Length: 287
Ligand code: SAM
Image 1 (tube, rainbow, N blue to C red):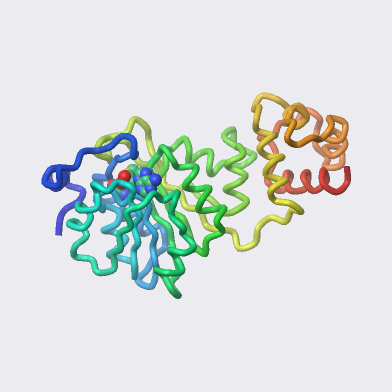
Image 2 (image 1 turned 135 degrees about the vertical axis):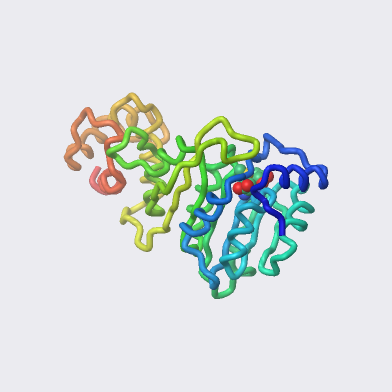
């Protein structure tokens, strides 16, 4: 069994396989053994669980997941890492590797085919260049999963976990809150990776909401949210009346705001998800 957090050993394995880090795939591998252990523990997996891992790299987190779960399916885009992972994960019979782009992977089908009757969890040290598309795919596909435990850039983590009380509250925070209950778990400094990234990272947990906030038309609510945050310094009234794709007059927006009890000068970032649900319902039904 290799020590996948020992820099000398990592370099020796990678050079034996002729592997060079690719910046374009966001490759920063963990080298502190505590962090993959903590991600695996916080995710809540046990020996009955199925895990989908996104971007296994050379298997540092995969190793901790395989030790604890019934089955781990890792999806890795970089074909040069396939022989590396076949080597480093050779001792695990509960490990399956898929060489694919996660954004092009049919995850519902994967869950059906690979994890019959298992509770499924998602874990990853995400490639930072596509954090948001990956998270939105996981949420919008309405997957039957227990939790998502992922490492992202600290700055992104603050946005994902923000509420209307935080300055980072944005359209993505509201989308996250619609689908899940987010939690910031811990920060990870750049010197815990090889190569070291320029930024600090954070591990977050997203637990899918069993009941979603009620609104008449979710897609319309998200169009209103998108418009509300399209120009951050503008008031809600000005942002929405400037959004041609909503096609609602300033007068009607004002009326709906009055019905909801919003001040005329309120900005989108001060509104909660339930404010947006109520407001979009009023725009749809009472205006
Ligand atoms: N899990 C490893 C670790 O923690 O040491 C590596 C994490 S590294 C930050 C991100 C990994 O995601 C890399 O292995 C990279 O090749 C892979 N990756 C990048 N884009 C991907 C994509 N679209 N689909 C699947 N894997 C991807």
